[in-house]
Image 1 (cartoon, rainbow, N blue to C red):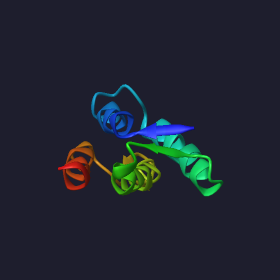
Image 2: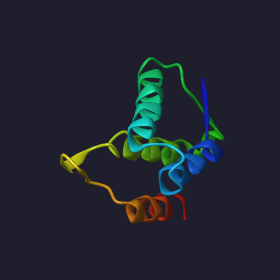
Image 3: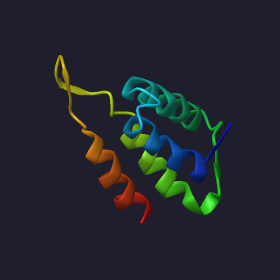
Image 4: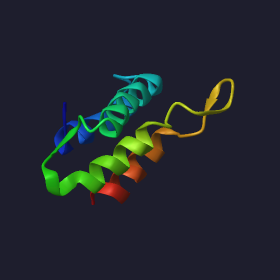
Length: 87
C-alpha cells in the first residue's frame, strides 16, 4: 500500500472540518503503521518519509481522551502539529 504526503495533509483537515472522527483518523493511521511494520507501506514521495511517519504516529493517538467526554487533542492541536511537521 502507498501513503502520500498529499493524503496525510488532507487527513489533518478531516477532524477540523468534522468530516472524519478522531477514532477514524486513529484507525486509518494504525492500519498504515501495521503495514509499515510488516514492510508493506510505500511512502510517496520517498523524501517525505519522516514527515509522513511523524504524522502517522500523531494520528494514531488523536482518539485518546482525558475524560469520558473530552479529547486530549483539541482542534487547534491538529493545526499546530501540522505546522510543526510540514512547515
